[in-house]
Image 1: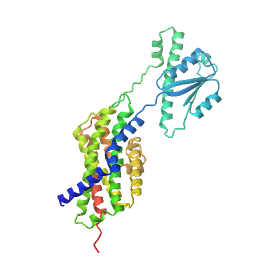
Image 2: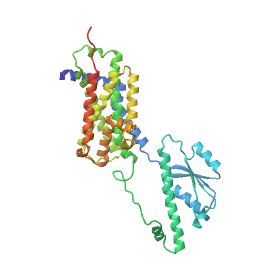
Image 3: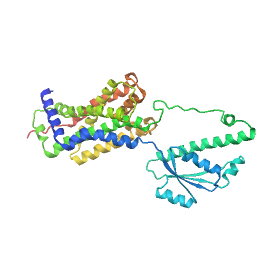
Length: 386
């Protein structure tokens, strides 16, 4: 391999990226922009959900019960409506997301020691099932707290004991749940590190694929075909600028994740740099392989975006743990470097894991960093002279 020819190819690739506004924005502007947009978009907690109440009982107890929901950050009382029909209309128009129907004789049944059924409607029209399920969890938790308070009050009055003692008699076992690594359950703490994985998988292959296919369409790649540049020199010269850009973006994304969004970083910067370097070699390697298979920039863009979106979101463990996937999905997840890098950055950021615990994932990333350039080397063939 002639290092002078590799350096010349790398300089040519670098100058083209700097001269072209689209490629410059794709390389240096889009990664930070995606981190900010997705970080804010997916890091917001589900709070202040509009709630409407249909109170058929209209007693002090029913009002206190409804206020238990409106007094939290999770729900905002959007009004007390007079009928289920009016509540259904407001729900269908999107004015409220939750409707609570309190039946008649609510207070009388509770004071008599009997149960009262409160009906709750939750808007299930979200494309993602997570918000309705989260709202259901909020409703159940607040209802459980309100029920326990009512039961303790009844027992306290009947036995003539303090409310605290009555509550202890009703709930002798107290379940205490601790959330490790993210005690405040801040979504952005796990989302921001995951976006480092996704943005690399989205930007680096797209930048590489579009660059090579553009040379095919313009015919400038014929200069490579007719030159003395070898296949290995072509692959190395194409990858070097993309790897440098990927490493630079890794620094920017780390600063945004930790400094801007406040995600904790408990691990080793050196280990993060090593993992990012391996991933920065593997991801443009994917784009180089794609560019050698397709012929147009439109096709390259579609294939690259489809791979990034489908694999980056569905098979990397961002939303669904890989171990919980069906067997076919589990196999697909292990065929791409995104899953391994996601495990590495989550372990480094939130858990402070070291190389001794992440060596399998790092070895897999090293394998991908070698496999994709090798596959590109096999696929690239210079035209024979006539």
